[in-house]
Image: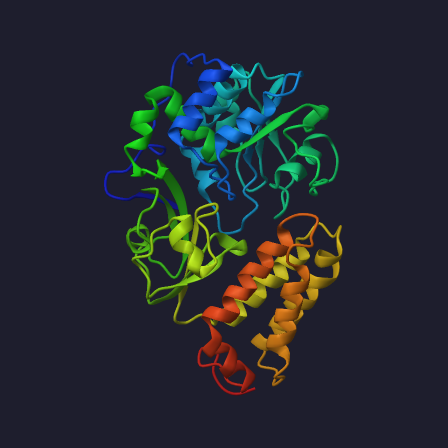
Length: 386
């Protein structure tokens, strides 16, 4: 997995180790995160200052957790950060923990990532490194809290926020590894420096994991709000048809729209979001229905199996999509897929059913011509008739 850069944007991936860490008060930390307009880089894009403020409301010292679980199969940025600049993530975590007077600071690392460099970087910063079991939902913050507390890594009660009751029952702040790295740079260089990159309404840079039909799969750092085509250019797309933006819970953007800015506003018409910074290029030699069926099947198996939508809805939706990929001549398949999508959306114990339904709905919409050909028993990519 290579690392690339867009123009001269190398902030995270070229950061040098820091000596003495700056000591911030809770108010100063909040002001930095708020004035910088920093949003989470782990998927939801939630304002970081709001999460920080939430753990300062309680009387007990909080636990601060760095989330480097990276359960998304198409994401590699946490691995790159903890291999190339682990000290930046650890320093960001230590700065936040000290500012909040944390009871404990823990960097949670998934099984796909070698924790050696992170452990070495954490040695003198008062940060613990926990090498945990993985899984697609294991990085969800309440699932992560459960695993750190010795319970199964499944999402907890959505009505109980981890910022109120998390690890050891204490208020817990969970921030993605890249978010912590950005905070470390903001504390070092200031808000004005951070806001020099990106857009006024969406400042800073982001890491993007690029894979699929490209000459050079890898991780690229780019200013927020960059054009999709510009970010992909350094990877060398090969006969692109569409781009899955946001990973397995994302949505497709046609390759005919390279001028789409990677912002929430510009991606909204496609049902996509920047999310965790995943860009998977679909080439002309891959059947999108087959690929989507494989993803849906994987997501059905990766559910926490603790609510009806995951236990019943996702497998049925995945099965119907697999039958469509197999070119079963059943004209009722699209309506069955759509029915399952509507049944699972908004009814799960966590956001896993919604994310899966979003990817499936996008596939059916963007590749409607492929759907029609499959129903007629034909696939130009896989060849022949059923």
